[in-house]
Length: 167
Image 1 (cartoon, rainbow, N blue to C red):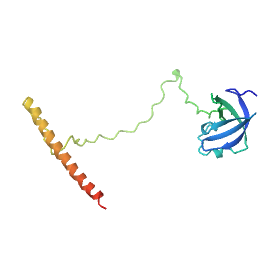
Image 2 (tube, rainbow, N blue to C red):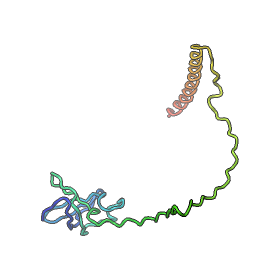
Image 3 (cartoon, helix red, strand yellow):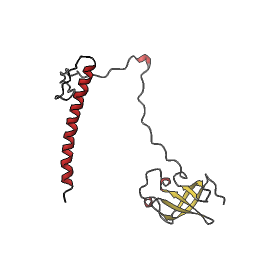
Image 4 (cartoon, rainbow, N blue to C red):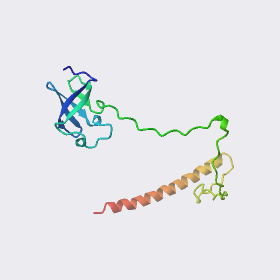
């Protein structure tokens, strides 16, 4: 018997591993079915689907240059029928007029929105309007607040480090 890619043949499971099963194809030839090629559903435990000595139909999906034969059980089996689709709602004919509109509920009255917080309350966000000096002032304020925040974070972290090193 000539083994060709695409042919479906009968074989016997000779060994099972975590990643697949080995199948004896006869005439001293054997191949492997990877766990992903056992069934159309997710296979967590291959022993739930196969057992040693079981006769299986397999499809040859690859023959490597080194002689290794890759097999598939799920491709050898006929495709399961597709689940039935739900019927689509029927459309009205143009002659019947417009479709009835769904009944809508009255909308609740709009509530006034609370003001949105736009920044740090400790920072004076009023713009200074004196040309280039305005930019320099804003940059100076930014640097000052950034240094204050980073120094506060560093103080908090240094306390944690010293406590974690105690033996």
